[in-house]
Length: 256
Image (tube, rainbow, N blue to C red; front, side, top):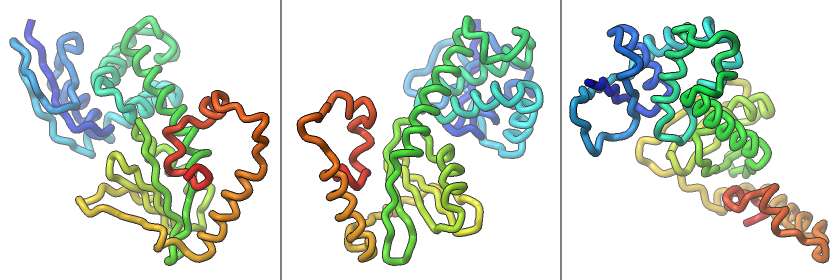
């Protein structure tokens, strides 16, 4: 049986563009797959179709899902698309196909007996947990130009998710958060909307010399405070790693 494999950009807009194409061409969901990564090994009896990202078509899919699925299932799908799982595109497409075909009655994401719905649910949980952690673990440093700067290195693409949280928390601050692994960052200008940017190959290298004098003083005081309140006799490294995994500590002032 021939397969149709839709190769798209690994972004929500790319996935939605592929889904739009699948329905526009009336492709069979059972023999159609969405692939996000570069093609290494081609399958026999499969047609590979490269899908160009079309933001207008992607928005049409977005509006349809929001209207048909309701807020809960719609949000699960969006969170899943920010997962690092290379199969997220296919899982989202198959879940959407189940929902639009009315294969299940009730809330779509509750039907965990479906392997694709289950996969979307697990991806959403993983993304949300990491995003929630970063909402508490992000540490800003004040630069000499009064911009608050932070770096993170998440497994999933949580930057767009935490952006709104920090924009609501610091509406009158100029700040920037960079995802080091993906080389992307968000910029927030006081009183304005978040701007999401992909770097053009130029590295943003922030060194200690760029910190404000007040920032250096506060960092020193914070490290002293963090060390002083610790009770050495009650140190529990295992519990510490459960509450604050090692991978988060590289960019935290008190752990540097």
